[in-house]
Amino acid sequence: MKWVGISGSWRATNKEVETDVRREAADIIKAGNGIVSGGALNVDSFALGEAMRLNPDCSQIKIFIPTSLETYDKHYHKRAEEGVITNEQADKLIAQLRKLKNTNPKSLIENPKNTVVDKTTYFQRNMAVVEASNELLAFQVNDSEGVTDTILKAKEKNIPVKLFKYKIKIIED
Image (cartoon, rainbow, N blue to C red; front, side, top):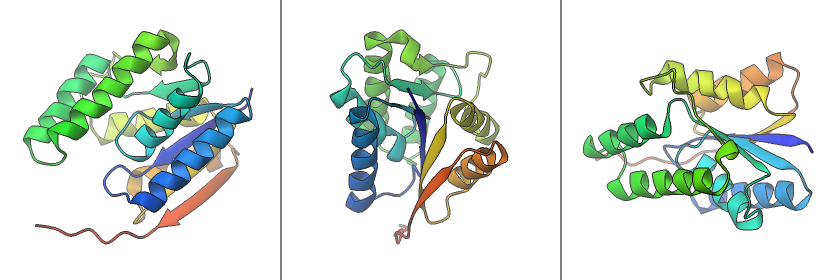
C-alpha cells in the first residue's frame, strides 16, 4: 500500500478546496492506498472525513497530532474561547478524531511527550506526516506557512509533491 500525505491550510477554505481535497482523498482510498495527515481543521478534516466514509475500519488512515488527544482537545477549545475558531469547529474536529481513535486506535498517532500545541510541535507533526508518506498532496491557501514547511520537508526527503494553490480573500472584522 502506498501512503499519500495530505497537507493543507486550516485558516481559510472554500467549496473549491473542500471538493478538491475530498476528490483526491477518495481516489487514494478507492485505489487501495492510504492517507496520512495532521488532524487539523479544514483540509486535514475534509480528507479524514472522506477517508473514514470510504474506509469504515480506518485501516487506510494515519493521522498524526502534535500532542495527546486530551491536550489537543483543550488547545482547540481554548482557541475557540479566544475567538480564533468557533466552538462548533473545535467540537466537530475533536469528535472526528475521537471517532477515529475509537474505530482504529492505531490510526491516530498521538505525541504525548509534547504538552503544548504551538508552531514547533505543529512543524514536528509535519515531519511525522512526511516520514510516513510516499508522496505528498499539498493544498495551499494564500501561501500558508505550515504547508510550505511540509512541502520543503517532503522535497528534502525526495518525496514527490503535487501542489494545489488557492487564493482566498480573508475578510477581517
